[in-house]
Length: 232
Image (cartoon, rainbow, N blue to C red):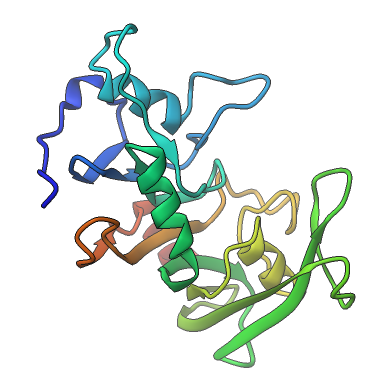
């Protein structure tokens, strides 16, 4: 049985919380604004960089590593998993289609259909913009289930079940039905005046890669979401 470890929070930045850690994996609550992995212009202000430093306890010569299992967009907050070995990473990715991933999203407008599944083939163009297509040869079949939890005159709070895990899937699918995620500059309204993307990875459920035990991790709803819905 993997040994649960104590978190050494001295090597963690403010706002990043470790929800669980053992010898195989680390589950974190990623704050909005923190990249999952580096880009050409930003290689250090990332969850990957921070957690690598964390498992090495600040020792650059340490051979301890972490491995990327999946990603969240920079301005999406919530539950994120990293593996501590390539074998664990591969095991988690092999069962990814059976991993349950739930999100919270605040979208513009009120949905006529309060519950449903959005389906399309998703493709990506040369400008790295994901879009829906009817051509199965161009895109990958994708499904997003949603349910309205709360409404105001201008906004709706949704629980979203990611049935497939494509890049930007939730953002593209909700924009497709005319209800883009609030604060989404790329697929939604560029001038809605909101300071962050209102998308949060609420929970994730999966079988532990070595014990087979079903594990569920849930993160707190950001105060930003409550303030946005209460003041809309």
